[in-house]
Image 1 (cartoon, one colour):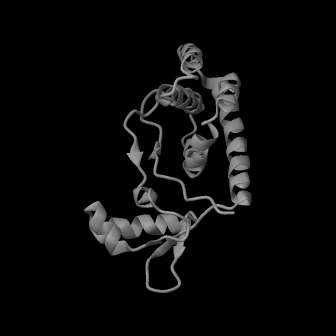
Image 2 (tube, rainbow, N blue to C red; image 1 turned 60 degrees about the vertical axis):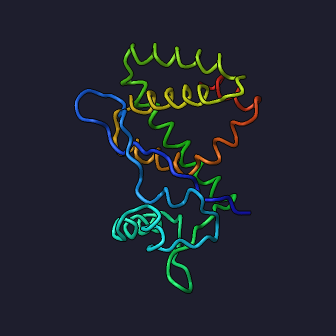
Length: 193
């Protein structure tokens, strides 16, 4: 069974200079936008993507090379371009296991580094997510959970670890929204936070 390649996400790539802070301006990972409508087996052609995105072929070629290095696309056997790769159940389980190990490590360092102000903000975000858990419009619920996770993650103050965790989250992003679509799962997530 294959799952579609993840949709594009904003990626926080590094800690900003100066004191520990979350980066407010996020950078798009180049080329991931081209996969938004892509399904496993879809062919992506450099010239077509460049035309649709309104850019030259050079950044598209670089983005496709990055996606190929990450295993999200592979060279098409005929006719040029690349094909979108899907995730098997084993791939997904592996990514969740990697993410869990990385997040445990980040949490250990966050416990050492987190400020009292950040702890207060985390408590407020848990209350906010609890308040909006049953809303039909889940945007505030998701936003509070995401902000909670960002504060906790960035308080570890380990830029390389943060990037690895963001990469895992990006791969799993489309699955995460699906898993939070049920009320029972939302309640578990709020309780865990």
